[in-house]
Amino acid sequence: MAEKYMEFAARCKYLFSAPQVCKVGWGAALLYQVTRDHKYYDLAARVANYIIEHQYPEGYWINVAPYRELPHIIEITAEFVVHLDTILCALTT
Image (cartoon, rainbow, N blue to C red; front, side, top):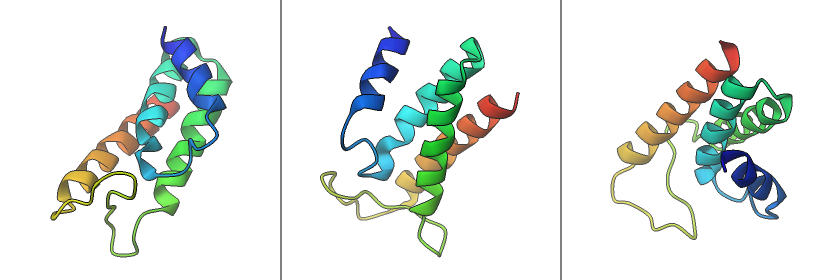
């Protein structure tokens, strides 16, 4: 089922429209770790690069439309750091 989800996600026109795509990268990285199929590696790496490119110069991330903005950015930043860490670990082990 996870592979079917990744196939669906990869076909989504607006997959890279918001940093929340990190969850797809997380799943792709874990699938790569299990299957060693490079299509998951490539998707996870692409997501990681997208997330990093959308980090603010001060080092944080925020929710962007269509997601509601939060009064504090620490939760979003912490979430993205965890996802990036998981992606990095899965792609390098």
